[in-house]
Length: 183
Length: 183
Length: 183
Image 1 (cartoon, rainbow over the protein chains, first blue to last red):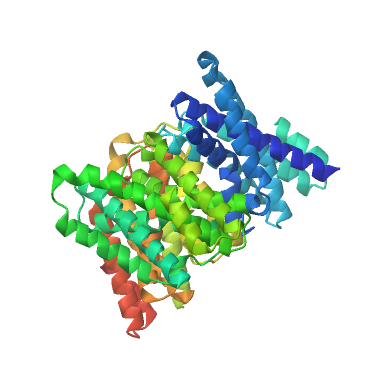
Image 2: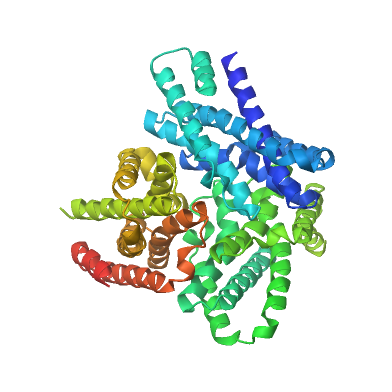
């Protein structure tokens, strides 16, 4: 049951990040392929770097292409639905914060499962949470959003630290995940 | 005979992309080392990311340094020959389009050889075709060219899809390669 | 004794690069987490890409988290000490040059130890020396510094070439390291 819950959080994070990528494509007036490229790169970018660094290769979406298909579908959905310009930036910032909180915890969780130590697990949580957005901003030609919003990086760091601390203290992982996410 | 043909396309794509990298260095008035750095990063960047993601490590140019040497030589050739400013931008855009078409097909081909599924193979074709140019534009301090020219990404995607579809349908790979490139 | 010397150079390079990352964070008025993120990414970024390309995975700081902790501590030290604005840019440029010279040699050394050929070893030296700074500048939203200072890339290239040539010629590695660094 726990695995199902963790997988759900992971899927939700990927969908939310793919949405932010597609919203950036929307702000830049890109076409459908641009939406799919930016949405997919944002949704799976952080996890791709994490899997490479901890040597979980080939990366998760090569083993399970459903992630890739989902990102493309989400991006296309945003393309057809999200043409209400005035609400885009606020939605983008909100989704980005939720996605980072989710990814900080699931990234640290995956590193712990790969038998990394606690320091590395925290670092992987932060990397998973931040690099999808960095890839999105670099591809979209914008200054990386983390520059002006370190408060979100701090939140991701806090979530990852709390999750790892709870997990090491022997708390059932269900509660540790919840604690890390609420932080 | 097929392998020779595929290898030829691959080499041609690398040379063409190295040329575009060197042309960007030329537009930025860099010195010879800047030419070599940008040309090489552009020529082998897309394939490097592909090899990492499908776990074909160490990457192709570590196994076969001739690719590296070729990129450096091409960049130096551009340094000494390409000082005809008015034609540089047009040549750059044209080479970029040809290189992307080549890499979309050879990237998908390599992923299929590594036993990836069709969706992943298409994604690898697109990644190989686009990331060399993205690395070039980021290093050169320009906004990524794909922003304003998604039509080329669409072409790369189309080429990769057609190639993979033909290959799976059992068409002799020679024809599948040709079909993907012509698309 | 040689290993101790090489490890010392490596540590010194990482500390110097982490300092440059933190100085860029200082110039951008970031908070403490921004300092830690930029300092750490700069300190270990080049080595991370090198380890991935030569398939020395998981990367060095996953195997030995002390590197990670050191980068974070150095960044925090800069945060509390480096608020003397007028000297920051000069210090940044000087540290960057020293760090590149160190990393060019230790990067090539590690590639040789991993049984890479001489051309690949030189390339790895240049990659290790340059990509930490590139990651720093992209994250910091600045145009990559190598654009305007190819002379440093040339120096890194020269150092790596001399080190590899001396090492292959059978010179004791202690002297080869010294030769590469002095170049």
